Image 1 (tube, rainbow, N blue to C red):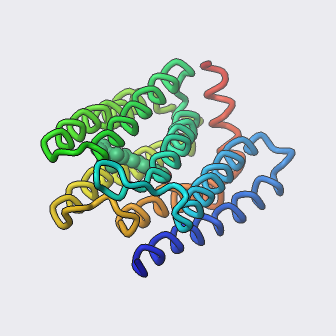
Image 2: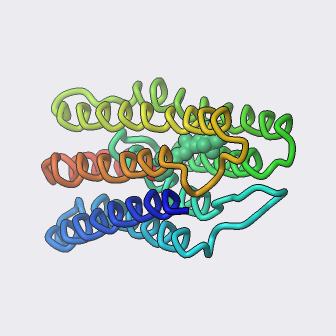
Length: 234
Ligand code: RET
């Protein structure tokens, strides 16, 4: 129980700090074109911090089929992963059609991942897990190949570098989630507990480190260029 609280509170405080940092950045750049990316990072952290808070209070934790399920995580992911994909899609210069397709596949991955965590038998759990991973595979494929082909040429080399940094750090982090799922299932007969520190660490990395690269280590002119380029392509 103590461990449970710790993992969730670390998540909450990390994301609360992110909310403040990215909120301040959005405010400072309120007249700039880059504001939309800052606001997205702000909202990603805000929403996740709220969901972590509900989990510390047990509001989004239920017993389903005899397992403790932290469904707050899935409500967090269902909102924040499409926003993260929107940010990467914007920087990579993807069309709205492609971004929408990625969102649909992503929601499918989260919903079937949820099925994997509530399935009563190991057998069904594993089948849903594989279904969810297939959707994850489509996302990774698009991030590497489809987005790779969109890489801008000169004079947009800064945008190109940012796009590959974001795409590859996203791929590495997102790949770790199914591994965290497998390791937890091997280690614990009742794995989907809130005490899952793996997910907390990954969430912090996926939201905070990603947000820091975008908001603090990238010049806002590069962000503005990326946004313009994506809008011109539609
Ligand atoms: C699950 C288990 C089933 C198989 C797969 C999963 C993948 C989850 C992912 C979550 C990403 C979350 C992020 C959150 C916030 O920042 C549901 C764990 C493939 C990729 C990036």
